[in-house]
Length: 99
Image (tube, rainbow, N blue to C red; front, side, top):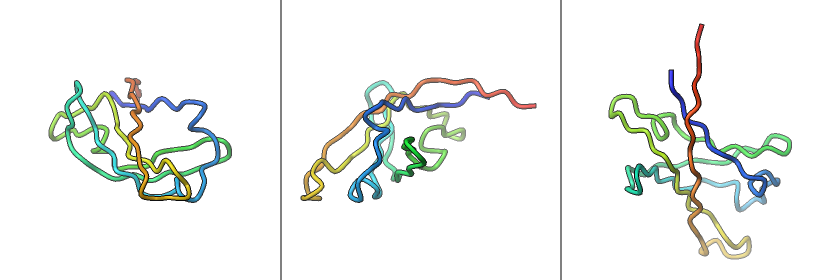
């Protein structure tokens, strides 16, 4: 079974401030083309920061859609929630073997 895993950079591992721990717009891209729109939220455990979204956003078996990048719309100013910016998260392929 083939899966996708996001690459988390060191900058993304810092504990988020309350503004960051909100729902984010996620746009999956395949070959530079936006393949849809979804939402996600952040979950912090220790020093690790996870992005949580539905499985079909990163792997849609019915449509055969497997994005190579997620574009996140994030707040850029903790004092002004109207200031936002895009952050691209490349995805890599990982192989998951079942029993």
